[in-house]
Image (cartoon, rainbow, N blue to C red; front, side, top):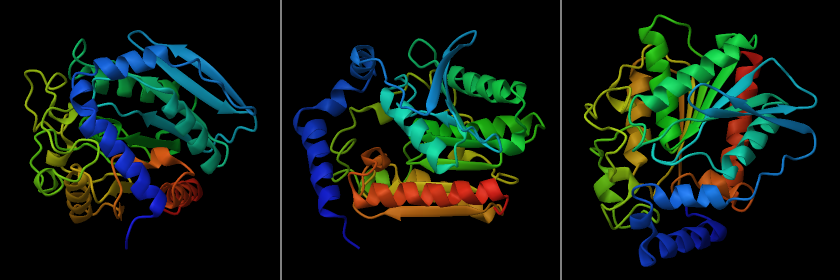
Length: 306
């Protein structure tokens, strides 16, 4: 099935900015992304929600609560950015979407520490601190849904490995969009999609080859690259990825490995789509369909039918 006209247009636009204007090279170390975050206008919280900044010891968190709050579930969202860039307003908008699709549930989004100032395991430590903060608010592990894109999609899996290693209860489900699960770049799609990935393709001078987060650690450590972990006892997962992504293998290989371990996994590969195409929201049929799929998954988790 071919991608939509809107999807093709946005894909070509991204390719122009990233390849022709060398944006990929400019965001390799995260400096451009950090500058963009600094110049973003203050996010305007939509009506029907309260938005609070929570100050933690080493980082801050956004706490989005709908006026008609359904406390049956809560989303812990871990943002993307290659572990080298902080949160953007786009993720605050994602939070609103997660809240609405989840039936008026609250969403916690930590602006976790990033490299090069804070390499591994800083991001994982902050994710755990955010998880524990939700428990302190009265939520149980079975009430928590982990959601993340790109680096955040890998980080939610790493968090589950850490919880399981410490013999703690796991959350009830995972939503992973274009998850970055293999920081060794060993998957076939790093070669097959090298020429056609509009964001990371045609160069090895981009953030997916940045080693600042890994530092001196082993990139095959499952807390860094979840692909190399064991997925037994994991909660149900919804994994979405685009067929044009260099990170396609990261999603497919993790999904296959988790399925073999007995985990309930829904893998959705969207033809012609690019990295975290869900940011298109209602602009493309593919992103609309992806968010509808998320809504169905959240509904299943909320009903305890997963």
